[in-house]
Image 1 (cartoon, rainbow, N blue to C red):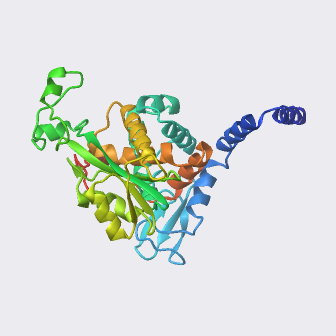
Image 2 (cartoon, rainbow, N blue to C red):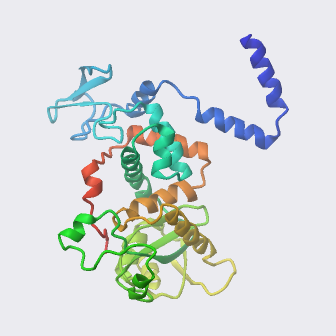
Image 3 (cartoon, rainbow, N blue to C red):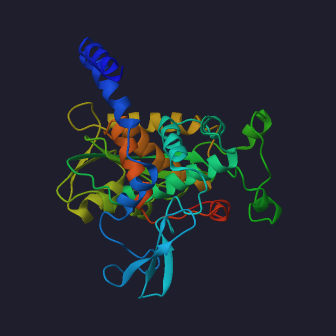
Amino acid sequence: MKNEAITKLIKEFKSLSVSEREKFIDFVTANSSPSDFKFIVDTKLADGIVCPHCGAKGKGVRKSGYQKNGRPRFYCFHCNKKFSITTNGVLYYSKKDFSVWKEFISCFLHGFSVRKSAEICGINKNTAFLWRHKLCDSLVGIMDGVSLSGIVEADETYFRVSYKGNRQAFKNGSVDRKKRKRGTSILHRNRKRGLSREQVCVPCAINRSGLSVSKISGLGKASHDGISSVISGHISKGSILCADGATAYDTLAANKGLERVSVSSYGLYNIQRMNSYHSRLKGFIDRFNGVSTKHLNGYLVYNNFANHAKETYTEKVRILTNHICSVKCFTKRTKVSDRPVIPMVA
């Protein structure tokens, strides 16, 4: 019976169009993998056993029995500490099966809300919220290594400061204004018009290959130091920097040895991709009914990976799945809530 079913499936596959075949292959690739535990072990130990506490590897790190769940335990003779395959990683202290994590990764890349993701994966909404931030924090490492080359478009955008989820900050007086509620027109009249310190500046850069960088730099109008601190380390020498007439980009280009093009037309050198990037970024943030400023950097990285990276959906699933199994990035629940109200690099 199985052979007949396989023969029939092959026949049906041959009748599909090219695009339909690609969709079928993506589906099969995304839903077929080795056993969860074996996958985690193989990914983690691909480059040898490394101690997550001191970073030692080699003969100084050896196996030391097994845990109750059957997973191997290791011992480091350099720092005299024991660790498991998930210690100080994204999956550390997670009691859910890895198959649930793979399902959540799919929800994450589709941009589903916390409640919808929790419903699909069968987990609590608070767990879904924590997992989202675990994935965002782990992606920061990927984005820190992004290098933009060729024609690089740069510009800054602004978001209103949001103290969403910061009740304690209002109680202890660290926020110097009254609470605001959405939908109250009187409050909108009290807001300052134009650029002010009620907004955070987010310098952004993107190249023609779709690689992008964005991060909060400070409050109010963009500064030379703020733009440089976010973009400077990500642009390769010899690239062409396309931006508006702001002098901050002149200084950046001079310091990095870049060719500077001041954009005022729709020719080869323009910032139309950057304008599109800003538009899609605003829509992405609005999808979550406003993002607290203390979490905004994580959502910027989230947007860059999910919406602007050129890899296919299947490839992104593979990259993120491998990444959370191997990266050293442990985010505690308390760490998420205790973040600075306004994170700034300048």
